[in-house]
Every structure is written in C-alpha cells, then in structure tokens.
Image (cartoon, rainbow, N blue to C red; front, side, top):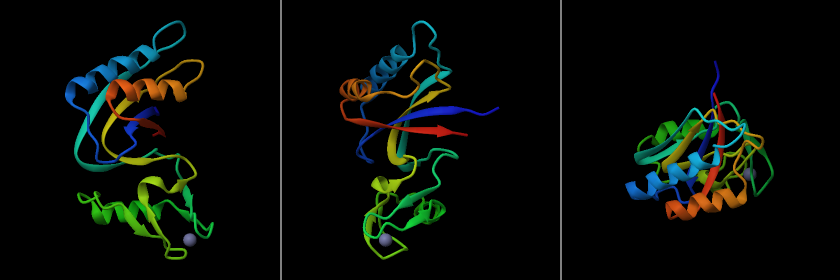
Length: 155
Ligand SMILES: [Zn+2]
C-alpha cells in the first residue's frame, strides 16, 4: 500500500507557530477536505526541534542550477542533508556543477520539497482537485500566522 501526503510548511525553514495556532490551522485544513466526495485519512501538526528535510518521497529526482542550468540528481542534496543532520540551520551550499552559491530550501527542484521545523501533514486526502490552490494556501497561512507552501509526497 502506498501513501500520499500533502505536507504544508512555513515558507521560512526555522519558523514555528504557537500550539494554538497550529491546532487552528489543522482544523482549517480539515475543513478543506470535508463535503461531498472529499475525504482525508489524517491531518496532524508536527513540530521538530531542528530544521528537517520535508521530502516528497519518490517524486523529486533532480534540480536545475540557476547559474549554469546543469541538472543534478537529488541524491547530491540527500548526501548533504545526511552530513549536516542536526545542523540544517545552515542550508547554504556551493553547487557541484559550477560552484555557484545556493540555498537547499529554494533550489529549482523538478518536484518541490523543502525544509522546516513545522508541518501540517495531510494523509491520503481525496477530492476533485487534490492539491491546495493559492487562495487555500493563503487561508491556511493566515490562520497559522505565516505563509505556507505545499510539498506533495508519495511513498
Ligand atoms: Zn551550476
């Protein structure tokens, strides 16, 4: 059995909400997946002490360098994440293609992933339009107290 997750993360990797705002945002997200034909397996707020990789499961394969357009396999990123493990507050890197400076959180991935200390994880949601649209992301961000973006993950 495979699982699909919508992982909603603050646009700033180190930012965390207070617990009450997190709970309100969970309720807000739950409300997006109720109604006819919609369902969701679970919606939960997850806090992390340190910045962690919010991966997309099997979805992300590579990223493109903004400076030289070289495509590099995402395994290069996973290696750096392993090396830095609990000190991912430093997301600055020099890319292997041309040495250009970049930030792991906003590389041009072929499928979005990110870094965060907080996420709202939505398991096996189902509705006509699966992912959140721009106005829904704004709504969740306003309830949470910080803009959010989404990582669609498949495991
Ligand atoms: Zn490059």
